[in-house]
Length: 310
Image 1 (tube, rainbow, N blue to C red):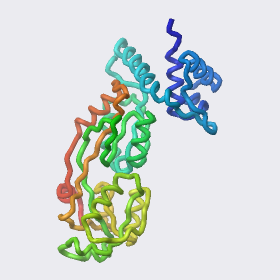
Image 2 (cartoon, rainbow, N blue to C red; image 1 turned 120 degrees about the vertical axis):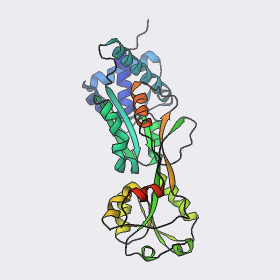
Image 3 (cartoon, rainbow, N blue to C red; image 1 turned 135 degrees about the horizontal axis):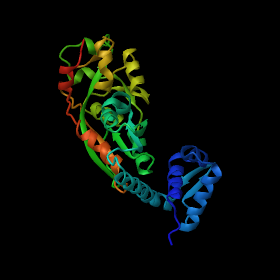
């Protein structure tokens, strides 16, 4: 007779997400002893250790990483079964964990979450904003259900779905010599001082690709946030390759100027990423569908035509 209960699986998933028994207990509104007992009984019945204990935190063991997507699938299938058996089967509830890379989480969050929230207001969304490398790692460890990133992702365990096109722009302070130069050519960028994102971010990779097309310059600053880079550029500390969405407000107020660089390829693709072994239940399918309905293409030329440029 099957002895594993749905509550035990919920405890296992909560600990995997929260990292500690205490945090899992708070999330499930039960006591810590109840969580510990449920986990111990699950491990006893399965005959495996699902977590490694490291300095007060619980990290998934090798076997635990294999079990987690199956446990998530069981829970979600039961939830879907209950929804379909109810009087209002189309109303989605529950939690969805989304990982968004820096630009998307800070400047495109309305486009990312708005359609889903309007269609499914009873779903609780939890969003973490990190660089692309961190989002990929969180997805592989099943700490987020779906990711939305700016850079290319190539991993055998991940599925990549196109969301929308986006544009980058090379920016400088209005008083910068390059901002005063008409008819810019690649040679004008020789010796330029650049401000870049940290290693591991999609913007860092994209900026390095731009630098490879230009005469040698100097990297004077590396910062972990787009907003920090923008403020450094405004202060005249250097030039940077920024997302158009991050630059548009400062462009309209005259604090930032976009350099005319038709000789550079500044087009990029924003994508959704999913774990291939993760069961795509109703919540994930609904989120993907909400973005599929709003996919758009945007080039540098489009943005500069529709935006404000002093």
